[in-house]
Length: 226
Ligand code: CA
Image 1 (cartoon, rainbow, N blue to C red):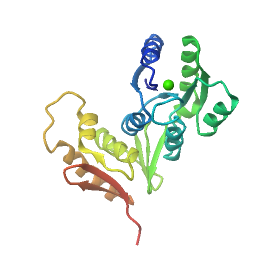
Image 2 (tube, rainbow, N blue to C red):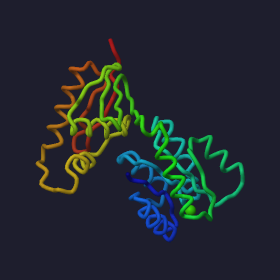
Image 3 (cartoon, rainbow, N blue to C red):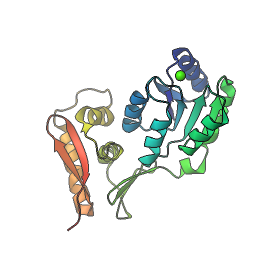
Image 4 (cartoon, helix red, strand yellow):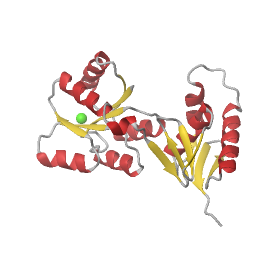
């Protein structure tokens, strides 16, 4: 279970981190909306704690983008403002819950745990592009609604591509995800898994294609039928 803290107040971040870790939740933290966007595009989080007062965005834009992409990661909004309109805006933009500062750490943890217990979270999250869907919790791929059991690393490659659909995913991301920090990654290891995934997608009748962007990474595009 991993949380993403999007908060620019470093003192608060360190308190949040300690509090969450006591509740058994490890956390990554970022201080800007732009770093948060990057983190969310590359990692899978169980929950996001989002401050609405960030230096580069009010946090609402980030939340809207997330929901527009079909990402249903639970989001708890933190607001320093106590106006009802901020809460309403947050909830309308797709927040699952909110908490006004200052708050008691116990309350934040209790609310996060409540979000993690929601049935929607247990049913898993679905990423879709073209006729391809990935159940990120069950790790199953669907092509035209038919389930396919792709191997773990091919599935991880597909997940990165789906989270980035429409944007190039840098090769480095795949290396980090597939091999972690264990090092010793053969120079063509990522290519091997991408190649296998391409074949699996083609064989399954997928309308999406994995393009190589030489020297940069990979891009998922939708091929129009006919
Ligand atoms: Ca702030």
